[in-house]
Image 1 (tube, helix red, strand yellow):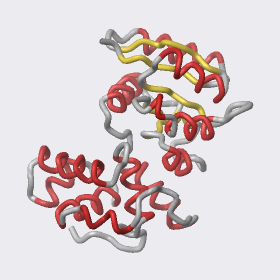
Image 2: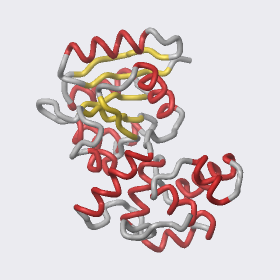
Image 3: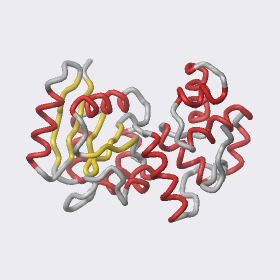
Image 4: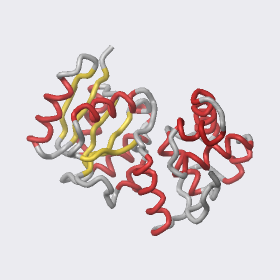
Amino acid sequence: MKIRVLLADDQALIRAGFRMLIDSASDLEVVGEATDGGEAMALAKTTRADVILMDIRMPGMDGLAATRAITTDDDLAGVRIIILTTFEIDEYVVQAIRAGASGFIGKGVEPNDLLDAIRTVAAGDALLSPKATQALIAQFANTPEPPNHPIQNSHLDLLTPREREVVILVASGMSNDEIADQLYISRLTAKTHVNRAMMKLNTRDRAQLVVVAYQTGLANTSSEFER
């Protein structure tokens, strides 16, 4: 079964380029194109897209508002959103992650990296590189906000000591491979700990796990895990 992709960008040339690339992959297909957030939300329902490539700056309902609306709609619970940015570190990235996006990529991304990104997010993983995580951490340090995620600090009691340790490492920007090396465990065990922590904290993916780690105080921008 092909991964169904929806393109949301107000620039026709960008949509055309992405469509041509995505449709060239045997396991992917573009099922719709939207020129603003409102249209993206409507098409997400009618096309049953798996992944949406969402530009932030669009007329009418922007990508940020559309992301929030889509990720809070129970009928669209399986839809994953990748934010498209002009610059790798965009001023709205942290807001997009908080809104429920599964990650972000620059519009100048290499073709194969874009296709891999779609596959990664469709599989339920977050597209959050160490550099992207560091950008999130910097945003939390510079613009702290009160928690707005329905996770209370008491929920952290559900985590085992090892899961807490793993969440802190995720929040520091480590990949599963790096966590495995740090804790002298297998990559599969590291991934299992991450997945269990996401389930217990009711987070959609790795990106949301980073947000919750900082909003609950489990991780903080001034501490650094001993390597």
